[in-house]
Image (cartoon, rainbow, N blue to C red; front, top):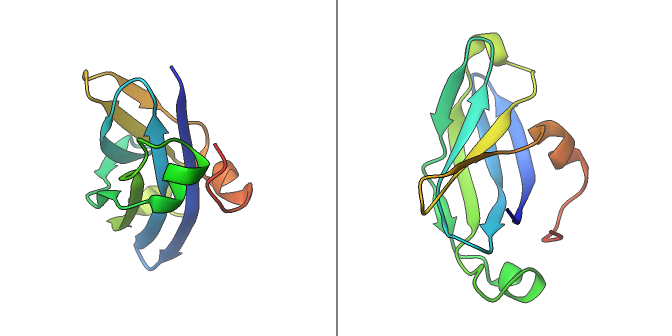
Length: 113
């Protein structure tokens, strides 16, 4: 499964996090993005997904035109300051779990796959 993703920002303010970045799967469209925190296991939807991403069309793939996410999400109190992962749900229902999100965010900005 070829899935590329990057977190551009994940800054917390109070009990909320501003989470922005992009994700793209070449084989099937990504239909849902969720943040996964633990313990206890808490899955928080990233509602603002599928935003325009013309930079990714040039840098990643011509089909990546609506691959950005940018949302404020609630962070469970027990997970504050801890790493989290992202769930990417594909068009066929398959769910792909990302690697550590904070590590991804530290790798720098930009649409590099």
